[in-house]
Length: 281
Image (cartoon, rainbow, N blue to C red; front, side, top):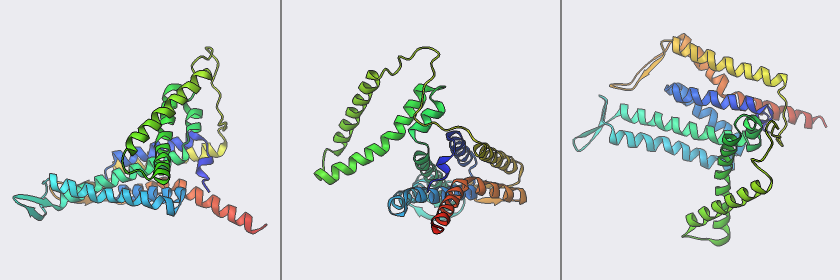
């Protein structure tokens, strides 16, 4: 049960903007671990274990790949693990590469969760009047990747093709784009009168619970980033791995845990509530 997606699209948008910005701009191993664990758990909850575990494993494999590549091409650091000819493989480069892989994996899982919650209808509802062309382009981009995956599975199941799959997928994408453009033109897209507002099939009023959750998201993100920047918690990878933290940094980590796990907590609460209601019937 996806209770978090029932909130207003603005709340969902603010959450993903906040967690993405924090994950990208604070390059900290503890924070990256929080981001990876929270987004992996949320993705598995949304997609299910059978369908989501393969993507999560692929994202975790990216951590190993990035760590190995960085250790082979970058030779900074003082802790030498082994030698490749005359070039050292250092622990600092390996650890830094793994952190970069965790950042990429968490970002991919984050966008995967966003595509499950922030549907094209919600994007058009949120930005359709202010940024009609950009919102339409973004919603079409979110729709494209799942459609390509469905077409790929359908082609492999029905025809067992070994060659020419890429060409077939490109042809299907172009054909779908042509049909969509023709349908939009026939329905009068872009020909509305000036001053007439767009309508949306997704109607959702901003309620009091949406305001409460948005305020909580804003406070957790802003206060957490402020406490982290004012603390003495720092991470250095070169020339040697050095990590320091204090009480304010630990408090910032707790706020980040609360922020990152809010959707999963809401979904679990809604599911437990639903099971309690069903048990009383």
